[in-house]
Length: 631
Image 1 (cartoon, rainbow, N blue to C red):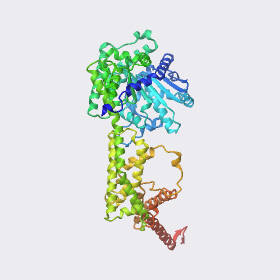
Image 2: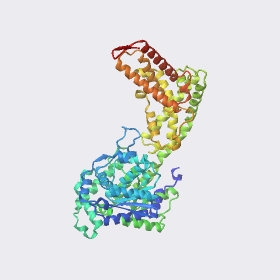
Image 3: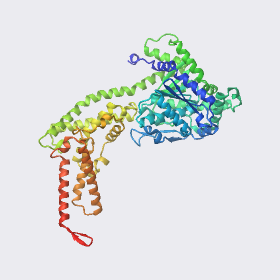
Image 4: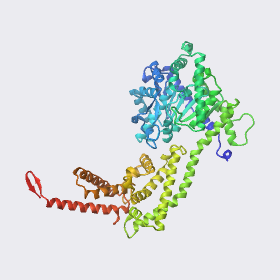
């Protein structure tokens, strides 16, 4: 079945699509131009912004000052992103249950050294106004500045509700930027498609941070110095202090060992890692290029490609991106779409062969066999979350009758002659077959949605699942319809006496998650219009739980003698009254709230009666004011 499914050749085709456009060559040219002309000690000269037709380019210099190199090498710890600049990335599905989004401290300081330059912010605002799309690019260490600039710009546009502006970040030989939580956050925001990480076959730099960053501080400084001098003054590169062969081999072996451990650990599952790839990876070689998106497959491919290299090649390859990009474009013009040797029978196998050939390791055993398995695994892993969503959609349609039966039950309760409403009818229900069926449907729906949450937390669903309107709307509809029944069951069984009130002590976690999804959705102007009639379901699903607490406060007021406690009880009563009146006046409640014999109407009547009694009592009992008795 897998062989006849959608063809595999997408990775090679996507690479060809990128190579066929001028984006790669233009981005690399601008990186080279600013690298040659820049003065790394002056922030304003570390970047260039250029308009090419309707596309705005932002390119960062490949070189950094000696002081900046020291900051990057000596500050390899991970730090949190500032909410002021990157707030969308810090929104977690379940707060407190996932490691926070963290990035390399040195790279973050490098970004702010440019961001704090007035010329950078001014030019960025200008290019946003002029461009229909923006490409942000950088090479080597400064590629991380390009990535952080892209994340900042995407966050800025989202927070300001600006019109959608296509943004693409193209990096060349970028080191890893942050932890796995950063990768997840980018996926959840659906920003992974905004990043194209170009990595050459043997380049050590994109792989270096898989090794704990403090291992090679001095060696990294020498590498940066050698690379910078090679890019700015090739004729003097021999003057740079270079690593000896043993030091190169030690770095190479350490990176290989860490990559091998990671690749093997991922096969059996692993914990969150310190540094993790994100975005689409564009692996280039002298034979062509392939694109991969799944992080686990990216790491495996990094390992397999490096296995075919050497310590010297891994350092020299960092300087060869211009050659690779030129060859890729030339090969596309030649329309090199043939497979060496026998042509496989299926499109799937032909696609695998094309991708393997483009990686330049098709003839190198045993690496080529492992690479072929890696390419197939990337395809399977990429499809699994979407297949799970399709499976959930089918299950959702299968449980819709349960929801429909509860809706019918609600309509019957609302129209009943008893005029108790939906909530009170279920709370005071008897042992009829209809009531038992509704209760069973409530339980079944809860199990389904708990299963959805479990799949999402186990990474079995796409990371942006909680932002997809179909599931956000479905979960909200479920919550507004069914949570009142869960509250009724909680108080019917007297659980508030043993556990405490529902909102703080009894609310299922799924509702807290769904509430967060709903708050984080993008709201259209139409949704902000005032209601002209009562809602079909009360818009605060915890309304009845709040009422139960307010009713207890009202009961306690009658017997409480402590002035301080009495004052707190009245404060709670007044707060609920204000909250409830606001919902009723804005028509955010359903008709069952205002039913003649509902708990809410009874509570309002009891409150009115109590206030009347207290007022009459205060009139009859004289009070001492300024030394005089007054009624």
